[in-house]
Image (tube, rainbow, N blue to C red; front, top):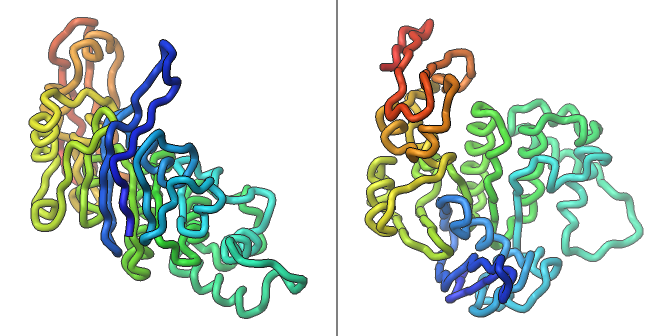
Length: 335
């Protein structure tokens, strides 16, 4: 379904700001694969997705979608093969148009337009049914302006717009990063449901190791513009965050020092509760970061965000912070 063959991309070539973003990336996805991509800042995750989408041309290599060579095609000509959901909930919808109108535009993408009614009655019923599955009450607000909706509601609509025509390939570029934990979990649940029901091939970029492990049937880790880990099948099902960190360190020859990913490694889901492995977080924080923190660090214990754990850093240069533990009303104590 998707073939990325030895692609290279260098920004600002020949200047002091030269940056090799992609260094011989090769990847093959079968039809129905749901592949998560993880890696630190500058690893090449979003650059790979943007290369597939045609945001910028690659310097060399090939990109094929369902057997069609799209390497030289501009972004608008690749759009008929792709569905995209962006990190920013404000992107992907037209804020001044109604929910109904946004969905109608998405349904007509890549098709010829004629002189007829914009939205037929049968379409309205179809859109109502699709929106109802989200359980966000949007089916009763189809005439509301999208700009009046919350970030999570807009992202849910963007997801529906991206998949309404069953694209050959769905690109999810950190599409839950700007959402609160509860809404992010809902959007990820909807993503899983839509991908499975429509047997879509999907690539999802994330900084969250737990999400990368739980979702999809394949996991790719990138570093310095290269694919350094490719895990699928039973190996992925049995994978833990600790396993993934060890594999990263073995493959790259260095420790992971990305703030967002490190904080996600200490978080794991137990039912509807989030707990943090403090020793793992503290041990993996870079010394420079530990030395520069002079304030208390508050970490949410649960997804509702109403129970917190405090890490107190007495003064700069202290190797280990004092741990303050908070017992939640549910009886869970973090130590």
